[in-house]
Length: 79
Image (cartoon, rainbow, N blue to C red; front, side, top):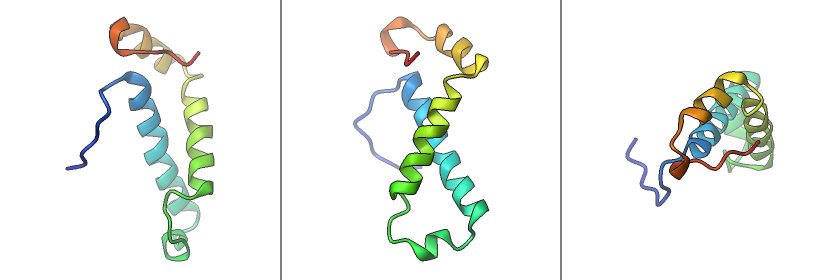
């Protein structure tokens, strides 16, 4: 997407990104005028929802299995 970041790939960052982007989708689906009403698409509501989604994702057996497949050098599990 052309976004420059200093972050090194890690599976937890990937899970966090899934949660972050899903939060955007849910907020827009729930309130289509959400972006019109806020100056910050990453406001407190978005941050709270992202954290809840990330916590939920880490409970899924599929995420745990994928985490177990990662080389130890690039993962720091949040279990």
